Image 1 (cartoon, rainbow, N blue to C red):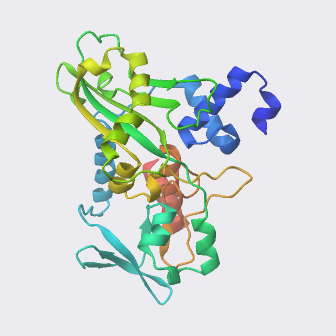
Image 2 (cartoon, rainbow, N blue to C red):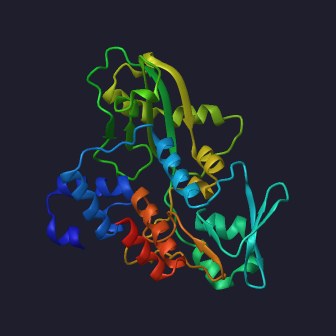
Length: 324
């Protein structure tokens, strides 16, 4: 509504749609106004921020915070079920029949994975479960990870967005391609003389299966990504020393995400984002299928909202006074 009443220029409208899509997976009419304001404000005042050490550095920082306050991170601890006893959480069941008891469980799995794989149908009110599982989802992705020779690329920049056709909707799979070359900013992310490159675009989960045509389909569907990268590095195919192609099945398997989705497609006025609360006592949810939504800033905020829900206000205030 804000866009329709204030912006008439078609090119500017498409640019705003693109900016919204890059963050939320939806165009302007499906993205909440505060998210748009934050994003455009960042574009106006900020440079591209990238963590030295890559995404691993962010994980390491989170683990340091966890262990600092007595937490423990268990790797290879595949959760099979969230255990419910007499209407409240009792803990989780791990893959090797190991049981971890806990009065509070916080799931950062998607709402579809939490309510179909981690809980039994009878654990939730029937109507609530049906309503939650009917939430529309953003498509999955095709990914292209490359290791390339860096010779002759001294002026290369690190982040690019390529829209192949103005006549095709920006949300159409393969039309809008995002490219990141983080080794431009952080040389430690690739061996000397090389760059690492990641490109991705939307791709539907439907129609994908690990059959005899899977490899050919991967190659075909990666071509829009290659064409996008060629807009930045024309001889990219001759520079490749390592190629890894990811599909919606890759997304679903390794990230354990239903249909490999990017998250819910909840447009303003057509639904509300769920809070961290669930109908089960002691069970909370965080992540991109809770308020305030999709994207790293929103997901981080969901964790803060859940933490503030669980920690009594006096303790929060005391903490803020101590560390402000």
